[in-house]
Image (cartoon, rainbow, N blue to C red; front, top):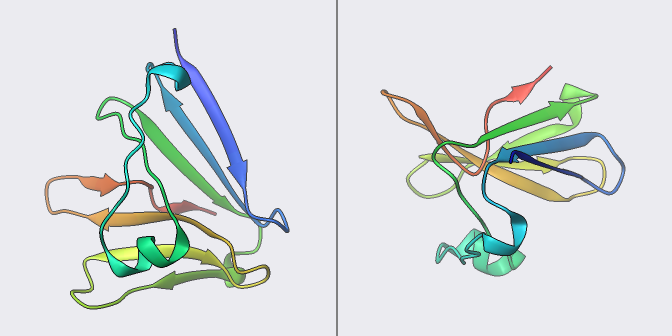
Length: 103
């Protein structure tokens, strides 16, 4: 059974849809150890066979924050300040807790 989970920032500018065959009750929730995720209290789930889609109603209000190695873009709404996910691009495939924003 496919599960589709939806979320958004406070103002509704950034939306996220996570599609997975893993039931929410069976998902393993984990913490990232990077300083950004620790300071934001972020938690993550993953499914290599799943998919994440991000939508920015106003792309100018999407902020991609990078620190240290510059390997990951943390996606933040400029309007309400909510962190909605992280995107890491690899030469072979895109990985992480997000996909590139859809405009």
